[in-house]
Amino acid sequence: MKAEEKIKVILYGIGSIGQRTGKIAWGRENIQIVGAIDSDAAKVGQDLAELLGFANQTGIQVSNDPQAVFKDTEASIALHTTTSFVEQVYPQLESMARAGLNVVSSTEELLYPFYRHPEKSEKLDQLAKSKGVTILGTGVNPGFVMDTLALVMSSVCAKVKKIKIKRVVDASTRRLPLQKKVGAGLSADEFRTLVKQGKLGHIGLLESMLLIAYGLKWEIEKIDENIDPMIADADYQTEYLQVKKGQVAGIKHTVGGYVKGEKGLDLDLRMYIGAKEPHDSVYIEGEPNIDMIVKNGVAGDIATASILVNSIPKVLRAEPGLKTMIDIPAIHNYAK
Image (cartoon, rainbow, N blue to C red; front, side):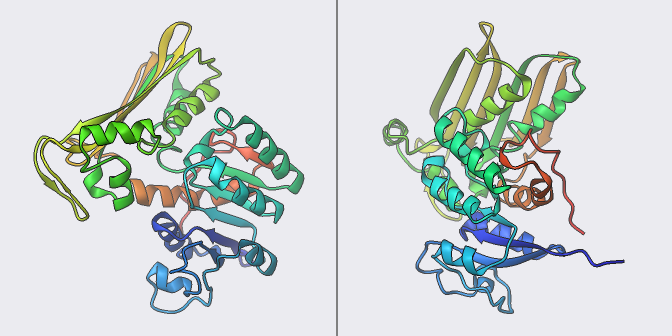
């Protein structure tokens, strides 16, 4: 029996999520990491093993020159984990596509980029098709718990009238950048100021709602989006920071989509220090009704890294272009 040829992968972004993704990919028998890219001067030149926590060196040095890596490295796909916004990552995505690389990205806005970035989405789609590669944005949220999961569950419904999704996350269990992103430790006034400046909030919740509407073929007539502070009811100390009673513990971020005059889609994300009874829930009002709860919720960081790696086989077999999670076959774990 012929041995399976390994999939050659480039890691583009070696931050917290990139490192988790790299560790999972390194442990897969059918994957070979062949390149690593990051702009952080402190990481450039290091052997990838130092960043992934491996004892033996990999022989792969982190580079801040993507074009050089693409030119000198034979690979079929890149795992891309740099930042959240399409505007910022577009040049990176474009360069990977031009190099003939398929891409799985954790960029939140890339889950459904057609609303905020219609022109860039069209250009990226056409470029990917011309180069014969596939680009996918995914993750745990957005990418799974507040969008794809609901769409998969709707497969057993004859009719769907409304969908309500709620995610409650105890942010004290998450990495420091996320705790800062939800405003933990700020005053309520500081929180609201940063929200107005677009510097706080969960990136991708709107995209989750739009992906569901796209999947259901629902025309959204109106969108309601609100970001409010969750105030700490006691003093809390995480591994990284302290939150005092009365300070902001995190966010309540909601998005509603109206269909035929009614709120057909209702997404409610609460991510804060000290959250009680964390969970993920999906309620579908339809025929039949579906009411599902994941106790304790899906662990964010490891889940994001896992779905990136588990997406590789489906992306490599997909039609070229800029795709969403519902344009490709269902992703599943394939670890040996």
